[in-house]
Image (cartoon, rainbow, N blue to C red):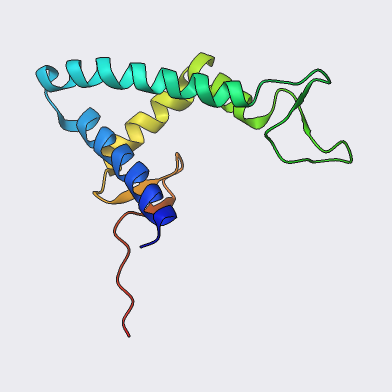
Length: 127
């Protein structure tokens, strides 16, 4: 496993662990976990959004170009996603949470629609 694969696997594994805890852990376990993870997630969003702050021309310096300008107009997809998940009506987050609690499979990361995005422990290739 390369360093990039190990990093990706560790991040996806942590997301699966958090999903499993949210779906099955008791309140005594969840409260300290929530206090720690909410702070970490908020800090992570702040850092990500800082990288995607608009420049003086109102364009995102981090997102790839979609036109001749060389930079994407702001708000970029990262800010739109943040608005949807952090500020929006919460409908999408509630649907996602319900689906995850019904379809949690260890080692499998799914999209909100239920599509398998990644297997954390891919099948070994025979040789």
